[in-house]
Image (cartoon, rainbow, N blue to C red):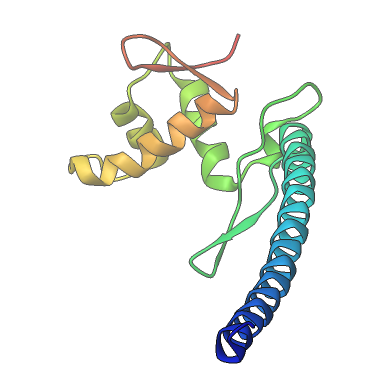
Length: 151
């Protein structure tokens, strides 16, 4: 005859294992469901990223905010656009470059727009604006660092 205590221990242990198996099966099901959700989210994120990249590449710059202040972004030069689209200080910079007899350094542009060119640190913001105009196609920067209007 079988020992009733031993038989009861086996039955108890089998019940514990059945319960553990059921909990693990539920956990495995939850893990698989979450993994499927992540795969869907990843595909959606890829599509949205692609759409945003397409929109950014075709969109024109718009005014934005930096540090709570409105900032006018410089639009790229395109056929049919003129300098009147630019903020007044950028229009003055282009006019100073255009009035020069030839390619000019940032210091000469500063003198043309009435900026204090005696301190190099005060010239750097102007240089940044000149480079921004070059990047957007409004001006051209020569290899020697001088600026000129586009041909």
